[in-house]
Structures are given as C-alpha cells and as structure tokens.
Image (cartoon, rainbow, N blue to C red):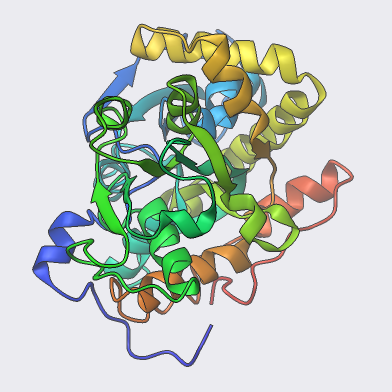
Length: 367
C-alpha cells in the first residue's frame, strides 16, 4: 500500500450514510435474526466460555459458517461450550453487533471489516482467518452488450454505493480509462446502485443492462437470460481475492483464546470437508439457506454459483489491502491505516496442528 496519511473516516457524511461503508457482498437489508440451535451436549467439557455467539449471512459466500453449523462441525470442536448463532443481512449490522458484544465471532466481507476496524481506531476487531474467495461476476444482457467495450454507455447495477462490488466495478471502469463520478454513478458508464434482492426485477424490466454482483445474484440473472461477461477472479493474481473473512472481538480473543482456537479449528475442518465433499456440502448449505430464509435455491442458480466460490483458510491479506486501495482511488475512502487488522497466530497454530502451511498477513499483522 502507498504511504499512509493519518487514519481518517469516510470523506463525507453522505458517504458514511450511504456506504454503510463498504457493505458486504449480500446487501439484503440490515435485520439480524437469532437462530435457535441445539445446546452443547450435556456433560461435555466446557472451554473457558459457556457459549460462543457466531454471526454470518444466509449467503453462499458464507458457506463455511452455514455448513459448519448445519453439520455440527463447530459444536464438535467446542465440546460443552454452546454455539449460539445469529444471521445478518448487511455488514454494518454485524459490525454493530460485534461492537455491542451481541456476537463474538463473525463471517463478513472485506469492506465492512476494513470500515469497522478503521472507524474504531483499530480497537474493536481483528481478522483471524479467511473463508471464501471469488463468487463475483459481471453479467449482462447479451442483446445489448456483446463485449467488454460495449459496457461503456450502459446502465450497470451494483449492490450499494461503496460496497465491495461497487468499489471493484469503479476500479475496473477506471482501468478502462473511462470516467464515472463515484458519488452519483454518472459518467461513461451509469452505475446504478440496486439492492441485490431487486436486481433481477430491474434486469427483467430493462432498467439495467447488467450487474457487477455476487453469487447467487449473478446466477439468478443468468437464469433470466443474462450472460457472464467477466468473472472478477480473472482480475486477481492467482484468480483469488477475499470475499469472506472471519473476524473476532478483540475482547473475546483476549479473554477466550481457547474458544477462538476451537472455532478456527472447526472452520478449517469444515473447509476441508466442503472441498472433499462438494456435492454434500452444496446440499448442506442449501438446506441451511432454506431453514434460514424459507426457500432453497433452485439447481440452475445453486450449481453455477457454488462452482464459482473457493473455500479456503487463507484470508488473502494482500487482496484486502488492494481493495482498500481501490476505495481510496475511487474517492470513497481516505487512506486507512490497516496495520494490526490481522491476528493470524491462532489460525496458524491450528493449521500447524492440522499439518497445513501457515498463512501470511501481508504486513498488516497485530502490533
């Protein structure tokens, strides 16, 4: 990252309000729900906390949490320490819950993690692991857009001003040499901020010509006749970039390191199970989504969406730094000081015990 300016908040109150900055991939509102799960097994040995409160999204990019809870893999590692889960529909509400002590550990996108860390002056959270990469695509109406050059002059949806996909699209536009005002979305391309849950309707009505969106929204649009013009993974070194991180309250990390380690071990073993059993894992995630939302994803959406997501333990720290740089370049964020956002020591302890290679923090580790 380039030379840092002093830690700063977002440029304007308007951005601060509209971003809720750098919302995660999903963008389906902001309400949180508590999910009742079986308590820890009677008689099992408790760790240092009676329970651990975990937050995540009912979204495929959070499948490590979905599957780990659904299959009891976290509870197995935690023994007599009970898992209590809450699901969120937007990044800011999950950050608020973490700050308020309503949850202890969360699965969340990179941009709200950056925002939550910088707004608290680095006091409230740490990124302690990775969970998923990929799952973001530029999908377009093939009758209006045949090539990347055709995107110029068209109306393209992103989930929200300043969210992870909005920043990525603005950065891609700049790389093409085109000009767009980040705040209004007006310019050589019209960037139309549209909630993911209504983007398919906007596409169907012709209000937008395409969208830069996460899964499963991208595959929902393809099911409506759109085509994939670009997979964001193709823009990143090694085709990988962080889309979901694991964060923890610094207080909880300090007071209950054994519980944090157990959750991370559950995450590592869940990712291993997902990658070894992709069809079973996909079905498990869809079952969890049905229980949480009341509706499972159809196969023509679930299958392509699942294939585009990579589940891994590495937080891909260098890509988080790049995503922050992109937000700065777009004029949506002052240069953040991210030094200390990562504490990967617990994860690397787990990985070593599992016979896996350690992961790096790209120089953004805890002070």
